[in-house]
Amino acid sequence: MAVRMRLTRVGSKKNPIYRVVVADSRSPRDGKFIEIVGRYNPQTEPSTIELDEPKVRDWLGKGAQPSDAVARLLKIRNIG
Image (cartoon, rainbow, N blue to C red; front, side):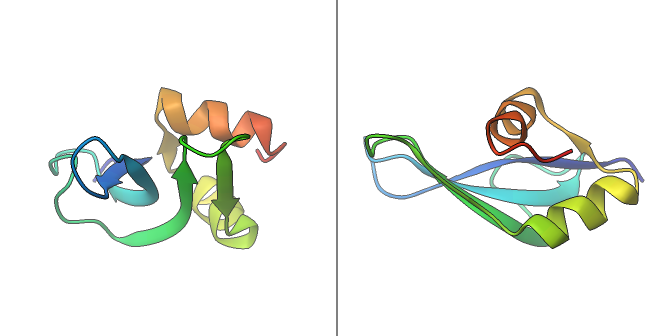
């Protein structure tokens, strides 16, 4: 099973807020996930990035691959 860390969209129409989740790479974007490890709100100034660092490091240690967007968020927060 290939596990990825990626963004799942929540929030209303034209009001995107994202969860950073760990999910099977075959599941749909807003579908089933294993665990929520953070939140991202691009609408605030500056953007709000909340990550549970121990969980993120644990999943990266287990081999979870971050998506491109999540990799950028991790780089901003100096994780991984």
